[in-house]
Length: 275
Length: 275
Image (tube, rainbow over all chains, first blue to last red; front, top):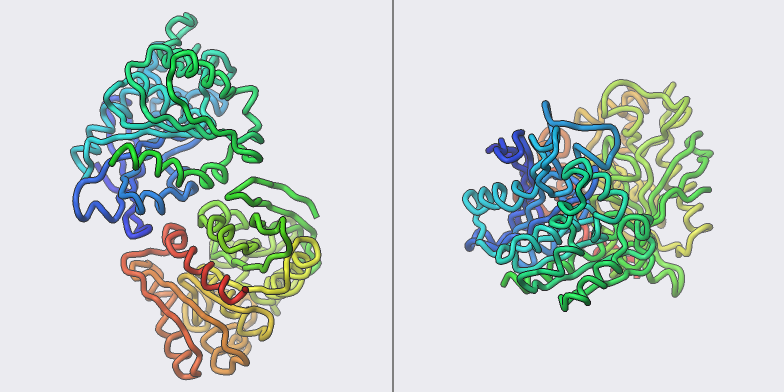
C-alpha cells in the first residue's frame, strides 16, 4: 500500500492511497480524511460512494466535507467508482464500465472478472482501513447518485455492518430507470429477478434492521424524473414501515454545489449514530 | 453577457458568466457567488484572484468559500487568470502566457495586445459587477500564489478602491524570484525599474493607505523558499510601518486543501472591513 497524496486540511490530513486489490484484480485508489482527533485515539468511519464518471478525487476536492469531519471526529473514506487500468473491461459511454461500477458484484462476462465493487467496499476496503488506520469498527455510509444507490444497497444488504446511511440524489430504483437497466443488464444479466438483490426499493421491503436514513434531493436536478424518482423510495419505505427522512431541496441541482451545501448535515447525522 | 452556469449553493447562487472584454480583447469568464442576502439588497464584493494554471473554475469548485460568503452576505467574484482563446499569445510551460497573466498590464510585444489583467480586474470587471449585479461599491480583494501577488499589488496600486486585502501563499516579491522574473521580463521588459510598480514589497514602502492585511502561508509549501519568501513582505511592512498579520500555518502545503481550511477566516476578515 502506497500513499500518493498527503495534505494538511482543517487540522487533520487528507490522504490518497493506492493498493493492489485482490477483489477488483487491479490497482485502485481511495481518499481518506483523518481528522485531528485520530491523534487521541481511533475514530469511526464514514464511507462515501461517488457517482458516475467520478474517481476517488471528486468528493475529496469538491464536497468540503473535511471541515465537518474535523468538527465531529469522523474519518471519511472515498473509494474509486470502479476497477480501472490495463485489462479492465470498458465500453464507450459514461454510464457503464470504468467510472460506473454501480457497487454490484458482476456475474456476467466480461465484467465478472473485475467489477466487484460491493465486495471491495464492504469487505476488502473496510478490512484494510480498520487494520492500517486508527479506525474503530463503527461505520456509516453515504453517497451521491450512483453512489447514493450504492450506499443504500450496501447498508440494506449487510445488516449489522453500518450504523447509519444517507444519500444525495440517489438512484433508488435502478431496476426501473435507464441508468440502472443498462448497467444491471450488463453486469447481472437479462434475468430481472437477479436485479432485486441490488435495488434499494426492493431490499427495503425485507430489511432486517432500521438504520437512521437521510436522503436529500434537489428539485432542480435534471435527472430527477428520468433516473432518480425518490417517490419510489418514499413508497417502499412507507410500505415497509422503514423510517425515512426525505428532503426535497428547492432549487438545487445534481452538482457538488448541492452536496457541499448539505454535507455538513449528513456528517452530523452520521456522527450522532457513530458516537 | 451570457450566463453559462447557475447552481444553488448554501441558499444563494453560484454562477459563471462569459463576456467580451474590451480590455483583454477576448471572451472571458468569471465566477460569481450571490449570497442569499442579495434578495434583500445590494451586498459588498470580495474579488478572488487565482494562481498559475487556474481558470475561473478552481476557486469556485474547490475552496468551499460559499458557506462563509452566505454567512456574511458577501458576493465573491473569481475571474480567469489571463486572457484566453484564439489570437491570444501563449508559450510552452505553465508559468507564462495563458493561465499566467500575473495581474499586470503588459508593455512588451506580443503580450501587450491582450495581457492587461490589472485593468480588467480593477476597472472593467468591477464596473460590470457593480452595474449588472446587486453589488455595492464596497470591495475587498484576496488571492492565492500568483493571485496573492495580484491581490496585494492591486490593493497597493489603487488606494481608496478596496477596504481590505488578504492572500494565501502569495508571491510577495516577484522581482526577486524565478516565477516573477520570467513573467516580468516577458510582460514588462528587461528594465527592472519598471518592475517595481508591480512588486508588493516595493509598493508597500510608499503605500498611500493602511488596509487590514492578512497573509496565510503553509510551512510545508514546496514553493515557500524558491518562490514565495514571505519574510520579504514581513521586512517591507516593518520598514514601512504597515500593519501585517502574517501567519505561518504548520504542516500546510500550496493546495486548495490549505485554502479551504482558512478561507472562512479570510472571508470574516474581509466582511468586518466591508460592513
